[in-house]
Length: 148
Image (cartoon, rainbow, N blue to C red; front, side):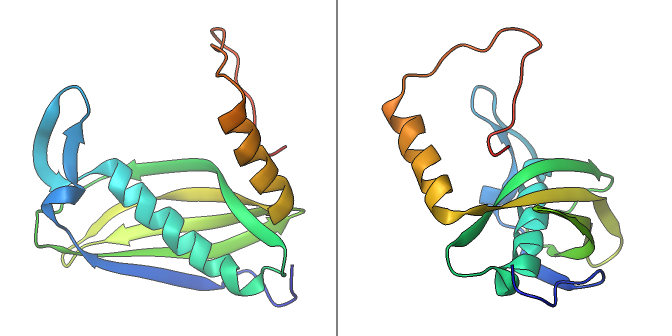
């Protein structure tokens, strides 16, 4: 990573909520006509990615690693949302950001995200391997990191 990524570095994503951003589930269909939690998290992660992109060296990329977010207020279709990420700290390859989202009236969500900086070649190899290898069924209680 390039020098200069320091606590307080920030980036934003500003958007207008569309029908495609509302709550809908694969099996249940449309559920609520407001900005979906998963979409808010996507925009928070996007803001976090914008924080670190200028500091990645050639041959580096970053992947999402952890998200801890609460969604505290609704935003209707047509509402404006500003998702903001602020760098809290860098721990080795892990980039920790504080995230918030606001609509025109109030805070609608807050939390933290972690991204991990990885060599692009290693990441591309993992992607290729995941396509070439049949999926295994995870056992209950087992998990794992996709980058560590």
